[in-house]
Length: 154
Image (cartoon, rainbow, N blue to C red; front, side):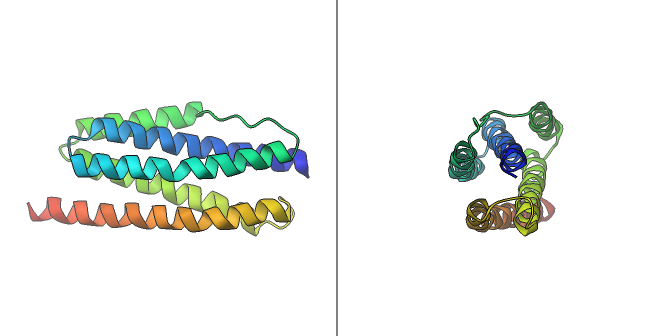
């Protein structure tokens, strides 16, 4: 199990690194200081997740790969480009980032629920971080609702 478990955790690490990169690009793309703070804050949510998953990969006897994926690079670049071309940059960014958080949450939860895929120790790490990801998703969902409402009112 540990070989497959480590590989699966590495995939989650990559997804979290992709999310971090996307938040960084969003912070660099926006002109709104409040949104820049939000994106930076949300980027920092993923650092302890990456650290804990990397520690578990090491515990399983493998070396964690803390880097983004080509798909993540394309997704964040496309999201930033789409936002730059949009008349409402932050609406586009927040919608895309909300989707990223939802996918992360679903992937963590799916692995957590799969009794055969991971050890109890990994399951405990996943459970802890599912809570953090739920909060991150809720925050981005709320930000999207506020921004969409403010754009509609304008």
